[in-house]
Image 1: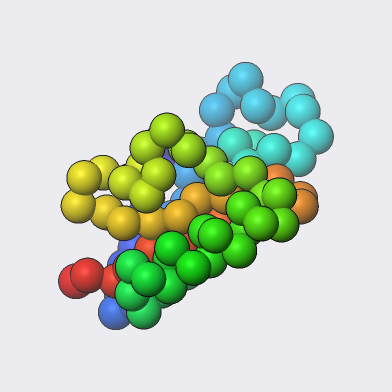
Image 2 (image 1 turned 45 degrees about the horizontal axis):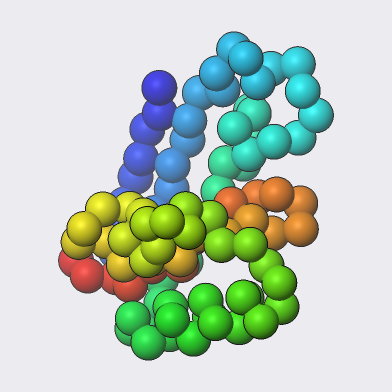
Length: 94
């Protein structure tokens, strides 16, 4: 279960931890920070960042659906930072 809030270009999501994740060390599906999202100015900016991360060997999440992992009308990049926090960079379209 979770809750989302959007105000202008700010988007916050709080999600209840699933029972199966309560006894493990940090994982983005545990209690706490799940992921952090940022808006890009354009699809080109998302593509440029994707290329840079790939060049640095950073694994792209949902690679089989990238850049539409959030849905057919949602252009975004998802990856994990070194602490395994999911980072999302998307184009603001509202």
